[in-house]
Every structure is written in structure tokens, then in C-alpha cells.
Amino acid sequence: MKHAAWILCGVLTGAVPAVESPAVAQDSFPSAPIRLVVGFAPGAIADSASRLLGQKIAGQMNAAVVVENRTGANGNIAAEYVAKSKPNGYTLLFNTMTIVLGPAAGQRTGYDILKDLVPVARAVNAPNLIALHPAVPANSLAEFLGFVRASSGKVSYSSAGTGSPSHLGMVLLLQAYNLTAVHVPYKGAGPALLDVVGGHVQFTMAGLTGVLPLLRDKRVKVVAITSLQRSPLLPDVPALAESMPGFEMVVWLGVMAPADTPPAVVRKVNLEFVKALQDTEIQSRLAQQGAEPSPSSPEDYGAYIRKELERWTGVFKSTGIKLDD
Image (tube, rainbow, N blue to C red; front, side, top):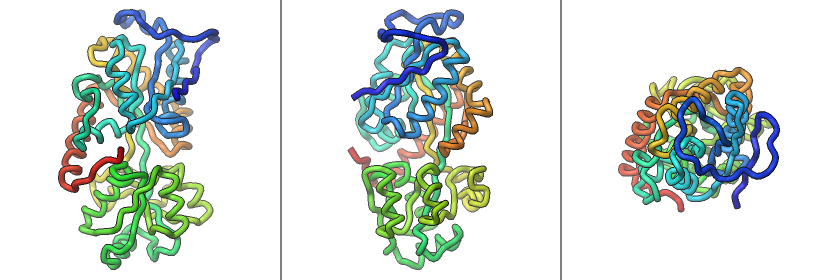
């Protein structure tokens, strides 16, 4: 079922018809509501961040922005829908890093990420925490790595599913230190984290919003964050990059448009998102969601997507990991 929410500047009444007009010039854009299509359900970071930013750019552009959820296939249903939409700037994709995981794993999709979509802006990073059951005898990253090494591959970790960012991130970490552990996949981040709390697995890699309440209640402990810098929410928790220079494992989100969208429109939308991400209130509200702004130009976002596609293609080939359906 599709879910849609109005995000308005001003007062609108009635339903919004699909936009059928041809590509428009920059000076007249937008002259109709913009649809921001999200491939994940309400409650996910992609949905909450898209609604927050959609509301902000609606006010900036004096336009209406409709957030539309088209869920399924790890975001590919939404991506294909946008890729096949009219290239006029009125249908945009708010994507996550999963958009590169399918192609990197060799999955067939109904679109080509490099040919059928054009980058508009990188928007948000959502880092993860390495969370341990309180009984694990480790209170630092070094002690955690020593614990896994001494366990000779017998300890286990959970993830949100095979090939999920939480799984892939832990694989990269273990590989970097030549360590092994038993992977236990779950259907979603919530169950994966709860079984760490229950002691059924010893550790996991999970997002801040899920971990922080458990950390406050001392039901888990954390030893590192996967962003390049420490989080202001947890200034005492070291970034993995402090021990592994350059290591970053964040869920990144951005905006893409159908190929052949007029460059002037792409540039205008980019500037609006960059402006929104520079707003201190937006930054504060993103932080409450366990995320941080990561604005970029269309060109830089395109280069980042290509780099990530190459990175994860190598990981899938070297590990033999297959994505969950």
C-alpha cells in the first residue's frame, strides 16, 4: 500500500494529479507539486529524513512537496518508478545506499543506476554503533577485538539481514582484523538488536536511534561508531576511523532524478537541499534521528555513487555474500 503525506507551504485543498507537463525551465520551476519518492516505510530513516527535508524545501521554494512511500525490493521499486518517470524535476527519488547494493551484488533491476537516474545531491549520513551485550568482557574497541580473537570464531553477531548494511559493515570490520564470528541474520534491525539485549548473540552493528535508549538503560554497551568522526550525541565513543584511518560505514541518503532532467532544474533542486541541510534547526532534528547532514554537488554525489558501487562490488565478489530477497 502506498502512503503519502502532504508537506506544504501555504494551504492546498484537493488531490494532486500526476504531473504531465514537459520539462520546465529553471526560472519557472517549480510550478506544480514535487513528489519525493521513498522506497521504505514510514519510521525508517529514509522516510523521516525525507519528510523533514521536504518540509524545509517546500517553504524555501514556496511550493508543495509530497512524500510518497513506494516500498519493496530493498528500495528498487521506488527507484524504478522514478527512473521511468517524466524527466521534469517533479518526481524525485530520496534514495539510500541500498541503491548500489543490488547492482553490486549482481541483482537485476528494472533500471540502470548509472544511465537511468541522475544524481541531484547527497543529503544525509546515518552512522552505526558497535553494540555489545553487557556481559561481553570488553569496554573498548581494542578489548572487543581481543575478545572476538580469543573466541576463535565461536561468538555470534546479528544483522538486519544478509547483505544489509549492518551485515556488510561487520564483515568489513572483521576482515580488516582477520577475525571470524558467526553471522545470525534477522528480518530487520529491531529484532537483531533485541537479541543482543537478550544475550542470544554477543554483538551487532546498529543505528543510533535504536541503540541510544538501550545504552541509557545499560542494556547494551558500545565501543565504537562507524562514521569518520565522533558523534556529538556520544562524544566519548571513538570513531572506528581513529583506529582504522579512512574506515567509514554509514547508511547514506540522497536525491536522484530521472535521466534527462534539465541540468538547470537539477542544479536548482540541489541548491535547495544544500540550503536546507545548512539550517541549524534541520541539523539538530537530524541529530535526534541519529543522522548528520552531508550535502554535496550533483557531480560529487555522482562520483560518490560510482565509488560506492565499485567498493561494494568488490566486497560481494570477495565474500560471496548474496542479498536477501
